[in-house]
Figure (cartoon, rainbow, N blue to C red):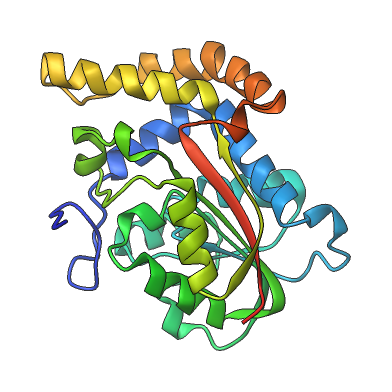
Length: 248
């Protein structure tokens, strides 16, 4: 699918900067919980040397990186191709690489949150990330789930796809990772996203208001976390969380 809003080597500017900022402001509970899921998935509680840096691939404005640094005292280094976002990350004192090829060392942990869906060659990208991981190093991937939820909003913010769980597992294995776990996240968000897609079709409007984000974050997402905890994450969700170990 050709998406003029998506980033590529010929288009380094990300079209969804406004949405990124709105999501940072309006989804504080969501972002904090996503960071917590990533923290647990990379087994940070077992990291003895917290001076060892962790890569955030596609860091954006640094929302997740800031939480992991400030709340969990981890050193985060970022990969981001958008020059304006690199400027934001620099102001937040993150060491940032403009592409994977500029990295000449290996890392123990890499995570990427809501990024692979913006990249047409997601398999090739995962193989490149595999190359900068240590043997038995871990990767954590957090992406939008369920193609049925794909809407004009996805297209406008530069998404090539939303993932099926089997599809994400398949490409992660092809990239050289053994899967530790792969579950859905934000189960109630699935229904919210479905309603949002219907709203777009009916009213021809894919805008997301700040108030609706804040309402979801404050009242809906806490319920969604409970549903995930009691097992709904094994059935469906708005996102997918995968963790894998480099074995090839």
